[in-house]
Length: 277
Image (tube, rainbow, N blue to C red; front, side):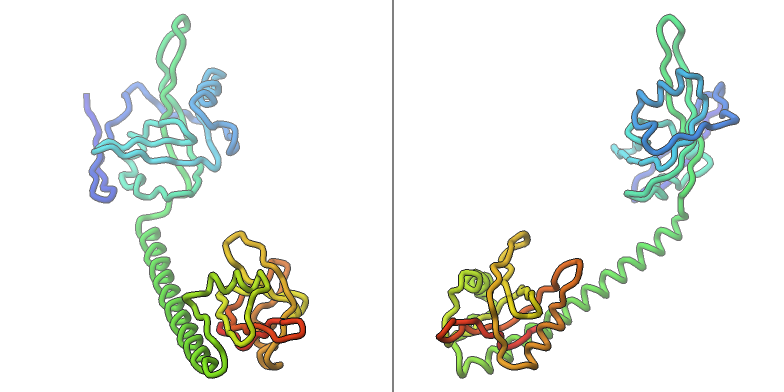
């Protein structure tokens, strides 16, 4: 008996694909099934028991299981024999992309008897949607370059923001007691509790406005709901900067970083002194 062997590289792992039995032959027709019709080995077996020799599964999900030199392949949650397909397409394991769905063509090897019952070994005959290794590598390289570019942009913007904040706080320190970035979390809590003091200036990292800039609230956590309070602005320029940057839309309000001072009597309405971002 002749065994066909194909060898491919997945990372640093070598694997071989032995051929299916010589008695096996591919079906001439494949019945099409939608994404949710064959989701388990039981679903597959029921279709096979009904005499369906070939199945075309749309939007099939793949899972690769690696153990030493052994690689197993699951389609929609059940294992498939991919030997013959691997012999023809030795790189296909490396071409399967995480989270992507494919159209696959499956048949099976039937074993057993009428009295004892039949078992079916699913066989991967073909699949559609695979991209070449070159295409995948090119896209991965592009995505990595894009990620690094965005990281650099964020670092540059963060550095500019920090520089502006320090400069503005230094300027304000002549007239105010400063509560800077190291106190930002507590500053936000103090604002929401209406506890800002006159003569003190507070840096708030994430600040939301509404009602056209008449109300403001500090964000204290990822899922926190700000306590909105009436606010004032040191001048119209600052008001314009804040309201245009923290714009309202159907998706919500864009948060901004601000320096805000405790208000004076009567009312003690907080006053935004500067927009930082």
